[in-house]
Image 1: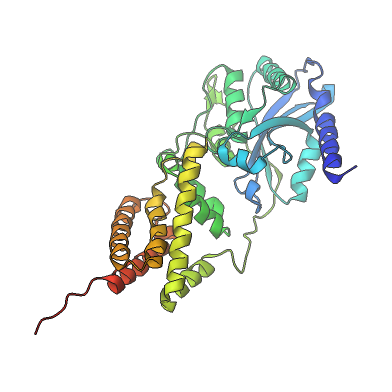
Image 2 (image 1 turned 120 degrees about the vertical axis):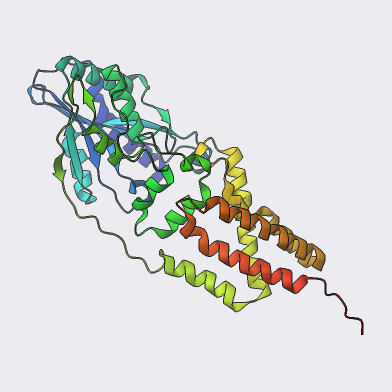
Length: 379
């Protein structure tokens, strides 16, 4: 048996063992049942940078203590990377035992907080039934979207559906953009911050009025009211770990500035063309994913004014020794660079991309001067 087949069998056994006992039949919960929202701390892996949200149902009388997790996906999905980029990768919910769930986060050294929901018993039963029906019927499968559909927004949706009203809404940071909200989560992850800065388009510049991150939901739950009382007034700590900001010799702003400074100071035609070619290729990629992907966060990416695909035309003009073409294209890109600078002057990622703006500007000015047609002086 090959490793891939074995891995699939292990995954199926895990999912079966994690879920079969929870939705085989609807169980009548006891009056002592507690339902709560679990907020899991951030980690240093890319998938854990923003934390996690889950729902816990605890009924000691029936021996039930389950955590419903809407963040599962299958790495063995055919064309996994392309599906993720396109935005049609299917995520789904699984149910774990509370003990196993907590042990996983203890192993990863990530904090876990619990907020018990102050709702009547019939609504606890309704929520439990909805969760189990969702797992059994496949309704828990959803197409992942960075802002609109994720583990947190799915929890918000099922809780609001259970309460039969839009009780859970965002209460803080509604006057700043999604992009600004994301930035603190990238401490110690400079190139992840840079990557999201340049690949995201106009949608993340909108005001962040929608709950899409676990700690946003945690903050909002303490202020949301339902039936004239706070929905989740207390925040209990189940696990507490001090967040360790990673230190990397390469994943930091210094290597970024060092590389760009080297490109500028070396003043070499080949290195200039290499840099501009990389910028142009990235621009083509941003345009491609903007049209190809269903992730609306990647559409309308004005960062292509900086990562301008027309920069690749400089390679052609250099190959044909067309100085006029180089000069005109350099001026054109300087103009788009100026437009880009004034467009993002009030955006959250200005400081992150400013070194790229300066580097591109210096190189383009240098090219324009070198290839400007000299006017002969008649004596």
